[in-house]
Image (cartoon, rainbow, N blue to C red; front, side, top):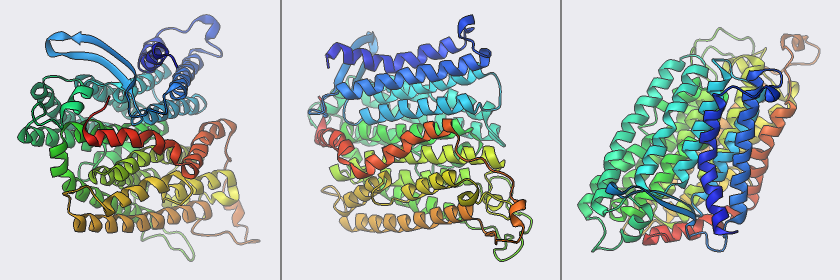
Length: 548
């Protein structure tokens, strides 16, 4: 593809959602209002995100797959000469899959919201915030200047705060405030590290900094790397989220609307791990080597902690009797909540991503990038399904969903139950689906970490991570059994069928929004080389010190 066309496509990915966000606040032309202005603005959101997705697919189709390590579609324009801050955009094998994933999930979210409009204030504000969130996320993966990365990183916080606070469920204000406070405090610390790297390195250009980092004459000193990397890692770890900086996540997911949960898990969490690969590994290699064992330790604690938290939420409450009767619930609020369970599962899954990065090996980092994409597809699908389940049953409480009048999806909504079971087995890492490869490669990387890292320590981390996969299988299978079959199976001829109200199966628009995620989960599981062929050359070059 022509270089100019590539430049325009990448610029369009960042600019079009921003322009669409502004246009969403303007009155709709009379001929485009349809049944009213609310429908018109929701249609506007679907249209803009659809155009952005088409541009992302065109960019991927025109990408030079023979040279994925080379920065392509670069635009480099001066912005603030006094600080050498430039509008520098580019894409390589690391960022391209994330750009396409972001565009896909945002389009599917807009499509889902068009038919299932979240209850709350004006749809105009909802669509404007959704598009602003997309613009900031795409910019985070496309920019190649540290200050622009920080601005894009911060740009997503305000729209996500309002999406949770104004369109969320119970406890939404508290969850929104925890989200904004944690991420803003982390960002302040990260900004100090980015400024130190840029000022000491003489430039904020990420390509130049990555290229000179391994040069002892022009690179950063060891002490500077240690201080800067620590600040940057802390800021990125909050967004990742890494244990113990994860506590904002379950509340945010539980309170967020369905679309907010999909984008938060599927896209926003990836910004933290992407920053580690794009900034910390190539620009502060000595510090990365120093901090890697500690990062791996926190990662495996997160894997075990997240899995145990999910297992506690999945099991019946002490007042639930499995062999007759259903006692009153003692687990109120968010306890036993299915959305909260999936949120905690993200802590565990992102722990595998962090473990892969901490191995400092091509195998581990490629596994981390693969797990990033797999988690976005699978967890995005799960949050869609849980949102649909809540719309139908009025609850996401597992004790209620598995009770005598609960969901029992296999009998009442078999397609919805089948999709939930598919998402669960994909999440637990069933071979042949996308969730398998990233976790396996991350553990392979831990089996043989980079030179200078303690192999016995990493073998211990690998064993703990493997135990985490067993816990994941346990809680996911419990969820499937309870929600899809129920704790109280209906016996023929008992009349219990009347106790279960009607439950709609998958609608056409839901099938359209979820089918791409199912198809890509299967495709990535059966053909992992399609993604690994993009990331591996770029990862090899980043770990070697530099990018072109």
